[in-house]
Image (tube, rainbow, N blue to C red; front, top):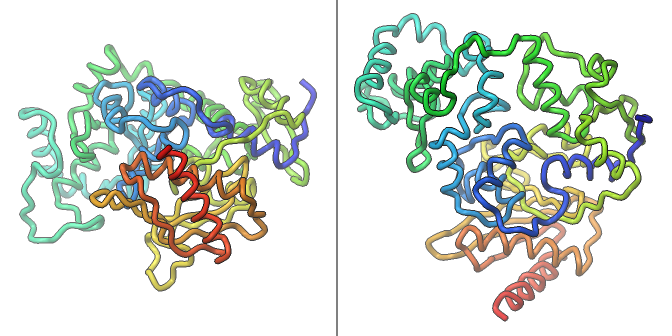
Length: 416
């Protein structure tokens, strides 16, 4: 295949096509579509903040539109998904379990996610947690009463919670299901007996094959990728498989983006899409509200290089130092990241509050632009069960009236 050259718009379109965000979805989502979307992304990051819908639910909504949130946890309980450390804590298709066994077998390489010191010094307590689950069945952290007198918090987990987590990272425990989004832990062998009958570590791919597969899966999920983008997607550690080696073998295609010095790589499965994108024939028409943990923006450097979108999540920043807000959601509009909105769902009152909305510098505001953004915000609000959208301050300030008029028009069309 002749080496392709993309405009920046074409590169963005190929990336969004690979991520399932190129065009609005025309068909109502089915449960199988959730699993297909996670397979397409390779992993679905988990986060528990829920000023709006929790991140994994929002990532799927951006691609699939309205769907019952219960489907995600059903897929986990049915064994179609499992949880493990992929990009971060993620839902991952069960057929990829073998790719992560090397991490489980060497949990000490997982950094803060595992504590060998805890396992050594608290061996009796860890064994007691394991024995409890073996005898009594799956358990939540809340099933163990706190006895150390501390109040909790991320860095003050009770001992049983820490034991559950190190056993999870070591692959001794798996997440059997979730209850009210709380993890329910069970013995790995019991979960695997249902989800991967006959699993044996002899089926685990060799480490070199695993490294190779992670590169191929990353490039396919991204649509196109600089070499420097690849490691972050599944958080792979050195030594890593060189994509240039795969390109020389024909396992990846090499291409160029106008204005970039280094090449990009494309999975052969996307050859047709890539040709269309390079020809300028891949139209990005979707407008969507994204999660801060969407794969499109979870690598902040990639988002800056590909979309010229300098994005930071500020929920861990002191309030007085925040620039945009606590939990800002990127706004994707027709192939560009055009702004961010700090939103909050007031479910009891049925109000979706736009605490602030900031457009990117240089974005050209038109009536069509405002209609696109208003429609996406209204769809998001409706899915949250908060049909009344309450707009606050905007940047630039002149966009406030245009947005409100578009929201009013959207509400009028829905009422009609």
